[in-house]
Amino acid sequence: MDASQSPSFFAALPELAVQFGTPTYAYDWATLRERATTLRAAFPDAQVRYAIKANPNVNLLERLKSEFEFGFDAVSGGEVHRALYAGTPGPDIVLNGPGKLTADFALAHEVQATLVLDSHDEVHRAARHAPGARVLIRVNPELQVGTHDHLATGNGSAKFGVLLKDVPEVYLKARKVGLNVIGLHVHIGSSIDNPEDFTQAFAKIQNLASSVGPVEVLDIGGGFGLTLDLHALGQKATRLAQAFQAELWIEPGRYLVADAGILLTRIVGLKRTHRPFVICDASMTELLRPMLYGSRHAVLPLRERHAPPSVWDLAGSACEAGDVLARDITLHEPVEGDLLVIAQAGAYGASMASNYLTRLRPAEAVWDGVQWVQWRRRDILSDLLAAELAAAPAVGAHHD
Image 1 (cartoon, helix red, strand yellow):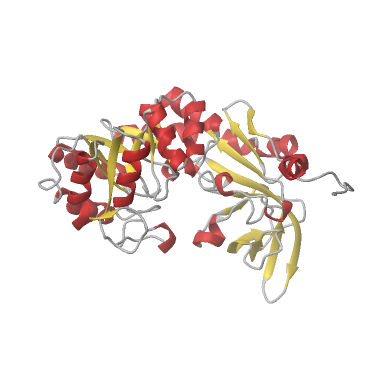
Image 2: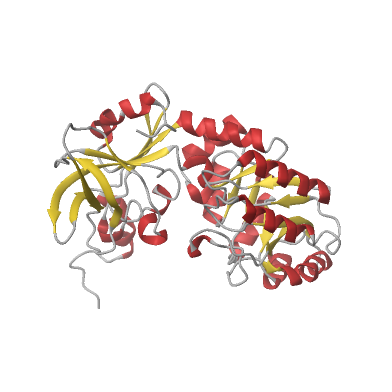
């Protein structure tokens, strides 16, 4: 199995299937604790703002707040409310994103969250709806990085941030309209394993030091790949913050939770066209990343058989041709009813799950070393229909 998770976690997965059914998201708290400890060691002086979108379960947020004293990076008003519900003070929340609503600005102002301004236009909107707010200016370093195009947020054609040449003007404009500009924010993308990408971004940011005035906070975002040398990155980021005489903030998401979570699914059938397929009860509605990003997740059988290996594609049960969760996986005599583990699913798995095809979003549970603790029950049909039935006239009703 995956060495990043505890043996007791895998031993307890059959019990999970009985208790909560499949498909179900399962998290190993020991793995998450190890990741958080590694992160703290690599960035000992940084303020950590966990990126809620990676996995927004409020039970997770509460534990990250209570056990590690993390703050949170939100990209919507709803995520701000999740952080507040988890007991986080507003000043420990950053509100990011390229298209904030008027209500988002007002909420950030009300709770005293830090706003990350993404454009000239947002400077004026923040001045109207969040006067005097603490703000960071998001920088687009115009950098090509080694990740999927959909995950690259810091190239010059992306919708995120202010181009390098415009940052001094935006920085000054924000100060002139009365905003409390505390620093710079840069996030170059997600799932970045090449440290040189960060090195180049940091070099471009350092060139701004002489043109923007005092910088109290340098927020380098997240996007740390799972195999990235985090200690080396931490040293470089710390040196950059020291050059600005600024406090360092980071916004890890997937790095913390991806390895801690798996999607447990059950084989519902086998078939062959020109390719051999194992069909499971999970689908793109539970795990969208393979279809959206072309991401690859290891697939492991929970029960190994002593039989010759064969190669299969793992197809989901949604009625979509693109609903293939993995290609060319090796299994030993797969059988209907077998349980499969889809690895590295703790990030952008449950958070992107949908009710497309009126499928019921899965349960979530965490293994605390002794027992399974439910973090989310599986949807029931009444959850999905409640808002629709509340808005619709009764069946058979007549209108004059």
